[in-house]
Length: 139
Image 1 (tube, rainbow, N blue to C red):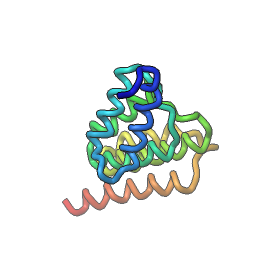
Image 2 (image 1 turned 135 degrees about the vertical axis):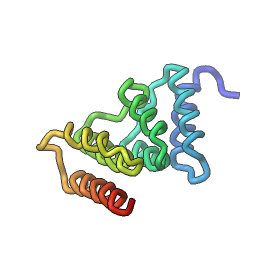
Image 3 (image 1 turned 90 degrees about the horizontal axis):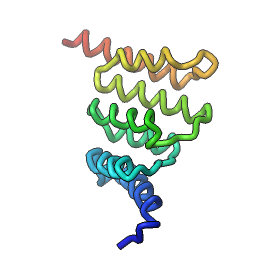
């Protein structure tokens, strides 16, 4: 049993373990994040954990939207440094494109300041557009 004072450390640690574990499903990760939200704990993490979490979402738009909602509400806190922001935005472009939600991917791309755009982000957007084009062409 954990003492009550250790809970703020235990939940974020559990979340990081779930995100990194190949055995943990996206539903298990989201359950831990839900506990963190319920306990009003701020989960401070890095862009790497967010990108891994988004990749676990697969084509689950509900999961991607929940992760975004947690970031926007401050439950999941990623330091707002330039590199972290662009890495997360690029991962979101890929995630939404994988779900076929190109409008959301384009919205994220359009929200990025010109000075922050980099080759990886532009490439991800181009790949997303090509994937949508291929899906439409094959249908």
